[in-house]
Every structure is written in C-alpha cells, then in structure tokens.
Amino acid sequence: MRALAFACIAASLAGCARVAAPVPAPPAPVAGAEPPAAADPELAPQRIAFAHALPAFLDPERRARLEAAFPAIDAYLQQTVARDDLVGLAAGIVIDGELAWFRGYGHRDSERGLPVERDTVFGIGSITKTFTALAALRLRDEGRLDLDRPASTYFPALDGLVYPTADSPRLSIRHILTHTAGLPRSGDFGEDQGHPPLRAEILASLDGVVLDHPPGQRHVYSNLGFQLLGLLVGEVTGVGHRAYIRDALLAPLGMNHTLWVPEDVPGDRIARPYKRESDQWQVRPHWRFGDADASGALFSSVEDLARFAAFNLAAWPARDEPEAGPLRRATLREAHTLGSFVSFRAESVRDAPARGRHEGIGLGFVIQGNCRHDHIVMHSGKTPTYRASLHMLPNHGVAVILLTNVGAVDGLALPGDGLAVLDLLADTGALEPRAPAPADARPGAGARARVLVRTSW
Image (cartoon, rainbow, N blue to C red; front, side, top):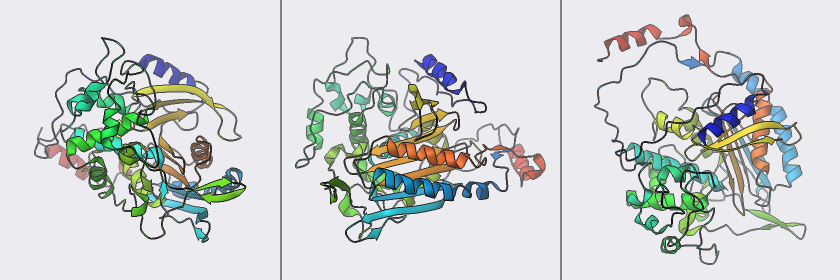
C-alpha cells in the first residue's frame, strides 16, 4: 500500500516543473511495542549536530508581496458569496503566526443585519477531528496511550467488534487516526435530533458490528471512528473528552470562543445557520451530536482558528529552541506527515485547468499535494448547518480559513475555494520555502555554537 502511495505521488508530480519532494511516511509501528514514556525534563540533553543555520524566509519583501494578493482574494471571495448564495462568509489568512488578513461577507444574523466579524462563531464540522486527534497524541506523549496497541486495551467496548478474518490485526488508535480501522462511516445508533445519541447507546451499537476490512488494509473515512476516539479519550482521562480538549488544547492556545455547545457562545457572536426554502432564507436549528460530538461538533471563529493554525505552523521547521504550547513540535509534525494514502486524481479548482493531486491522511489531518503546493495540511467541515475549511502550508508559514453559515453548499465548494486562495497567494511568487541563511546573516550563531560546544554529550 505504501509503495502504491509513493508511486501515485510521484505520478502527481511528474508534470510539475518545480516542486519539493513529498513528505515521507513515518516508519511502520513495531508490533507489541511498550507504551512510550512521558517526557522527562531532567533527561540528559540529546546529541545535536550543528551543521546548518535554521532555514528561514530570506526575502525581506515577502510579507508585502503576499499582501499584494489580498485585493484579488477579496474579489474572488465576493464572487464566491454571490455564486453559492451564501448568507455569511468569514475568511482569514495567517502569515508567520499572525492573522494578516480578515474579511467578513454578508451577515451572521440576516434578520438583524449583523455583520460577520473575526470573532463570529460558526460550526466547524469535521475540523473537530483534528482537535480529537491532537488530544490522543498528547495522551500518547504523556505515556497514557500507545497508538499501536489494541484500542480495546483502553476502551473495552471495542471488544464487541467482529473482525472479517481470523488473521486481522487488532484495531488500534493509529488505525482510527488514519481512517484505516475498517469501521463504517457512520454508527448504527441513529441521529434523531429529538434524541441525540448518548454514550450508552453508542457503545451498545458496537456489539456484533463487522469491520468492513482488516484494520490497516485500506482507507474508509469514518465519523464513527472519531466518535469512539473521543469516548476513549474521556475514558482514559476520567474527565470526558470535551473537558480534556478544552483544558489541554483550547485554553492554552487562547481559543476562548471555541465551544462544544452553541448556547455557550457569548452574546450574539454566533452565526445563525440558514437554509433557502421557498426562495427565502430560513433559520435552521443547530444540529445536535449528543455524545457522538468528537467527530464534528465544535464551534469556532476565524480569530480562534488563526491561533490554532499559527500553533500548527510553528512546529515547522525542526529546530533546537525550547518547546512552547500544549504539544511538542515533533508531535505536530508527525500529525502533518502522510500516514495513509487515499487517492490520486485530477482536480480542477473552480475554472482553472485540471491538475494532478495526491491525497492521504496524517494523524487526524488530511495531507495533499499538487503541482503548485507540495505539502498542504488541511481539513474541511460539513454539517447540515455549516461549512468550513482550513488549509495550511507548513513549508511556507501560511494558512487560509473559510467559514460559512449555509449548510446546503456542495461539500467540495469551500475546500476548493481555500485552494483557490492559496493559488492566488502563489501567483505573487512570494510563496517560497524557507532556505538556509548565509552564515553572516545569522544573529547569535556564534553564541549558539558556544552553547552547543558546552553541552554534555
């Protein structure tokens, strides 16, 4: 499967005149490996090679050149709002850790004429999965989970699953994170909005469920997998996945307007969800996920997602400086690395000519590449009441966020618009990757060398 993945990636890049190599897949997990130990700040320092300067963006006009694309992006998104008949759209661009550009289009509340603002809160759908994934990875880093042991070790309810063959490997957390567990897309517990599913009903529905294929064999996108992963995180932490994600991820990142329940959104910050009926916009009720919410129930804003994007982008490149934030940089880079190949196909972003694209899954994130962007880390969100997309370019320090309060839009439309915005940024010629700085342009290089020389090996 991995050989096929790299063959397809090579094919997708064959017609590109100038792209970087695809991100390599991580090594295969070792069966029966012991759980990783928690980080110990008292460990002796690692042996570090001091060979090259930290890669950096060398063009002093880079930011100004990227900003030159903002008028074209604004015009494009105005056309998007008209084309898709959107009530409201929030758009943000992150550059080097800052929300460099924001535009709100239309209304968060059409009846009262309230505009879309940077702190307007929308449902983000399956972007929620990236937070659930990072919660599991943090528990792994703390030594409380092993991604490659049977998930039933931590969540015995999974023992009720039926494997398709006697030689099927046991379902692991890594399989869930990469959508290769063999679980169906949706659970058999129903989505009655008058009675959203409770934990007991979700667990009872697992008994006797036959996996679609042996775990690890192929990719099948599964909301059920992440719903179960959320319950597993809650089981391991003892506080529930909502509280753990809030305290371990959202609060440290200052994502104070990212919430599980729309009623918790303060004041009139929420974008009311709409649907066109009888040629008029009608407010729709919020979709209720119940205890199956770890796959898609979070609400957030461009302002908060810009913090999340900046945190993820700051993991690149690998470097020596002290860690900051709720997860290790290496853990984020691992999540951003291709782990399961999904497809190679031709894509056309709106009216642009078709081009090849490879796509796969990291650990909770979708990994893409095409002739213009070699390494895209993204996820989109789709619920009956909202659409959302987040695209990040780790090698370039740039992210694009799009949120709308119309759920009836084609599920591929907003992700396509995110790619179109990336293309408009690339048209400036300023989306160059980092490069090693000349020796005389490295502030403090001598001091850094002296520190490394004094390090205890």
